[in-house]
Amino acid sequence: MTEPRPSPVRITAAGVRMGMDAMWPLMPGIAVFGAAFGAAAAQKGFSAAETALSSGLVFAGLAQMVALEGWTHNWTPASLLALAMLTFTVNMRHFLMAASMRPWLGQLPGWQAYGSLLFLADNNWAAAMRYHAHGGNDAGYFVGSGLITWVVWLLSTVAGQVIGGGIPDPKAFAIDLVVPAFFIAMLVPNWKGRREAVSWGVAALVSVAASYLVPGWWFIVIGAVAGALAGGFADE
Image (cartoon, rainbow, N blue to C red):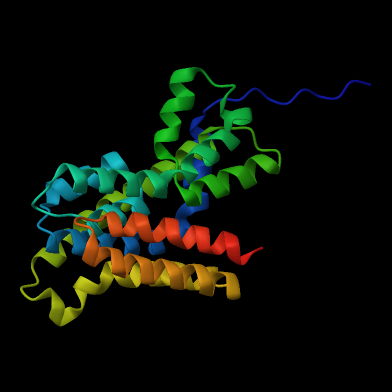
């Protein structure tokens, strides 16, 4: 008796709707994060249109936050290179995420496979891979889950920019602390013990020292490399 062949990989409207429905419980968190980015962008001088372009074309919340932290109105080749390296490093995980989807999305025509990857984000990647692991084969699930995330992210960042831009003194409402607070919140769940204490401590000390010695935002790259090396030695 022959086993039934799996259904061909396609993008269907039903799959898109299924993916969108699966993401709704996560959208409040995405909206809050997006609004925080928009408010911080307003304080950096971004207009609503510039904020929308950043969110619509880049669509990478963590990288956008990193870029915002390093944003300046006096650009130099060194500062541009540092910012490019920072965002590249932050987004390197997307190479692995996209590669893990190749056995599935690779069966689509090229324009559909690569086009759908424009909606790749951490939350919809995890949901789509879980759906596929349980036998789902409709690539529309991935597209739909990414599409709704993109729409909510775009709208919430613009809303945050409009609200944040109308606050005359952002420090009075601690809006200037949004980006540092976000990164601290990202660190806390990853605490596992001594290895993190060593690597984080070294990264903090080296980056602070480098900020006084090296112009631009290279201190972030230098601190990250130092922390990674310290963490590696701490394991030995």
